[in-house]
Image 1 (cartoon, rainbow, N blue to C red):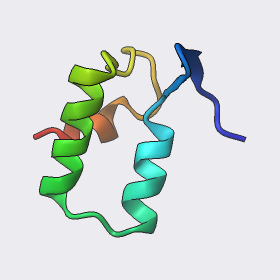
Image 2 (image 1 turned 180 degrees about the vertical axis):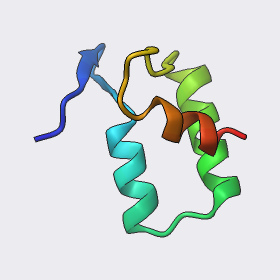
Image 3 (image 1 turned 45 degrees about the vertical axis):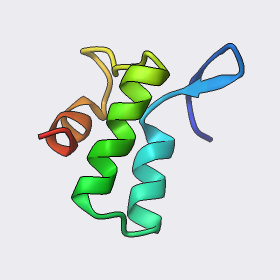
Length: 61
């Protein structure tokens, strides 16, 4: 089961984004654009202790 924090109807977690990117074989540029939109529009950045923080940071490079 995915662990996520629900806020105003949105799921705040990078697990769904990682799953989507791996299942659909999303290229690096599209993934970066998507994560940027999540960061800006969703006001979400994984906390420092999140297990996928390094994945998020690498995808944003």
